[in-house]
Length: 358
Ligand code: KG4
Ligand code: ZN
Image 1: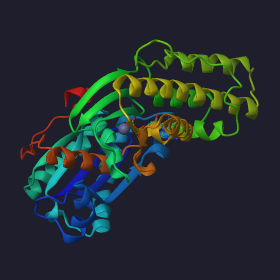
Image 2: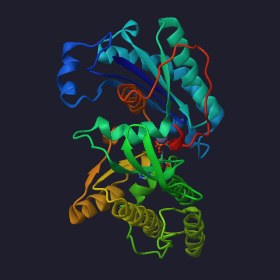
Image 3: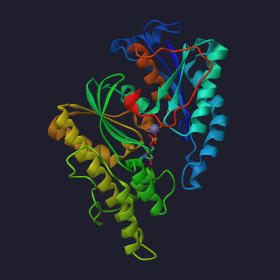
Image 4: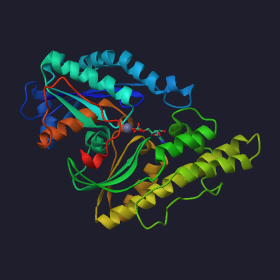
């Protein structure tokens, strides 16, 4: 089965093709080999356009600009993916797209294109939950994780710990009560005058700074539960920055960036270790844009070595939003017998949609 995945929930247009080795019209001998061994769908091609440069001037995503840019990019990306994979549209068996959560206008572009393709090609479509895409994206890496595992979902809009017992079997253990970890990175970066998206920019500046140079709070570190709170951290960063006076030196800015990153990572690490222990789990999956953060990865890897648990990440280029994770989640849901692809032509998007209600 050849699955086309379309992602347009925020500021990245992503298109991808995955193939399952199981029954389906377009299966070929080459795809059957590797993927059949694991039974997992195989990524054939993916293409991505990031709008980061366009939104940078505004310091954040401008929803209307995002929607318009998705319209411009989606068909060229689709052509690119088909060419890369050496397939034609007629070979596509299922069209999957992000239904939510995300920006309503942006979601509508992907959903509209996907449903139109479904009608034109007379193929079924499947709406996918964006976070389920992130959650299952480590199955695009080698070696893939095994169920059950703990998932740390850290994106621009979400910070969640979930117990995952199988495809579609997600139990929320804890989440942020205010800002997401990605937001904490983005807002701290903005205060420091760095570009958008702030996470990678702050991480780069932090490389020149000292992690313990500026005292910052570790919110909810000892709260005894698995919830997070990052809003206060942003305020603390602002206060410390003001303390440096009107013209902070490059070294002071780097120290503050390093200290903010350390504070965010410390809390993510502590809660993750707590969740692994409480749940008796020995496998961790890290997904979402912040999962690309080098310090977070180093700390989790070191803890994994010490404590003997396994950590799985998506491939680095598939940590942030992309079409591959959407195609993968759709294919895995179909394989698990959880999804009924439909030929409807009508659709709705779900800008707000909790993952434990898929
Ligand atoms: O998953 P994602 O691409 O989009 C959402 O679904 O939100 O995550 C984007 C978030 C942004 O907040 C971005 O600043 C953050 O991930 N991010 C990072 C890094 N790369 C992306 N944060 C810290 N360090 C990074 N290297
Ligand atoms: Zn995302």
